[in-house]
Length: 319
Image (tube, rainbow, N blue to C red; front, side, top):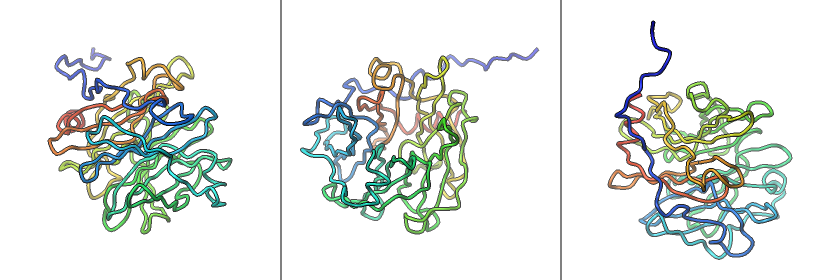
């Protein structure tokens, strides 16, 4: 009779993503004032410097975006004050002021765009900031219908259009899959398609969502995402995975890794505001082929993992 078990391969790598020995790289104590947590931060490398747009919270659970700078991608220095947001804008106050969080940073045509979740009494939507210098920020408004989050903007136009990945929520439990949408102007979005679903991953049956800004490779758009399963009834476990999308049609999956590439194991990932969470918002491909993967741990601290493009592509290709 055929075996019901998946064949075990002892040569399969134990680790595709290795944790930086200095993790966590930022904690609430690194920020001035009453900041208690930093996690799920967007990062971009531009002209040799690393710029992190942090998600931080204070003890009253007010959320802020806060810029931190680095020369090496590991040691970040927060600026003296958080990003100034338009608190006098009625639309921002109604649709985003309750909390804005989980920024992802993309550079397009010399402009940096920050897609973020915008949570209010109207449920969660996607909002968009833009900046050219990370000193002054313009809020461009909400760019999705409710209920939607985990918006990630591709780093170039595809077939003349802006492209984003997101995760529309389904039902009160926030279940959902990864979708792609297109826009002529970054404001009006449509032609949405489901790209990949929870059922495609054995370890992520609750929900999946986009994580890092996709990286262009010769084999497709390398896309690192998060997947969620339940452990012992309602205990959520957040892990990270990877797949490849077609370069010309990002609604098509070219290949995917069957296994998670990063699983909560360290104490700072298992214990915190939300236990058992690794949540990726950014990945930087370096000139030598190494990849820095930035992730929040347990909704409490900011961390980074290390891999290579070859390893991530092999994980997709071999499965």
